[in-house]
Length: 150
Image 1: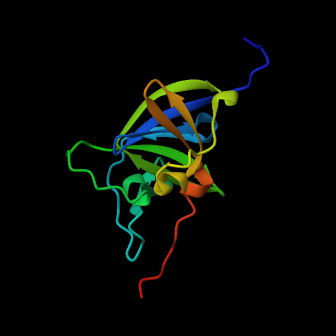
Image 2: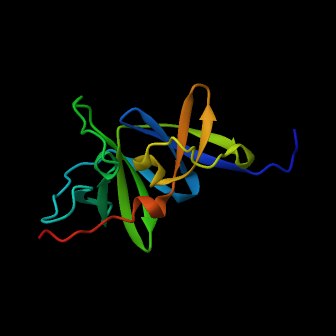
Image 3: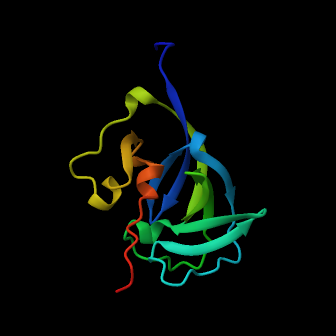
């Protein structure tokens, strides 16, 4: 064991059975979203907006963002609050797990066979017992393709 290994704390979350890690430094809060207001003409990734303690939060549905099938289990989603470019966003996920402290040296580049939809938002992966943790790149997640409705 080297004592100069750098570690990153990740909040783990699950969407459509895939585990993701979000660097805790990017996470502002975790909350149960209520009263999401749809935004007319917004892309499918935008679930809508909500008011969280006086802040307007744009809610991004991670299933739509990743082109994954929509939820069918009826369970209430969770949201992870993040901030980027001075704006507040909530990432709608199926479940939020624990915080994992992982050594930066164990992070691997995206494997060649990683689903392109995951690779598009990934900043690398960790191989944990039997499952792949995809590190979310917040800026890539928020890089939405805002196509105008033709």
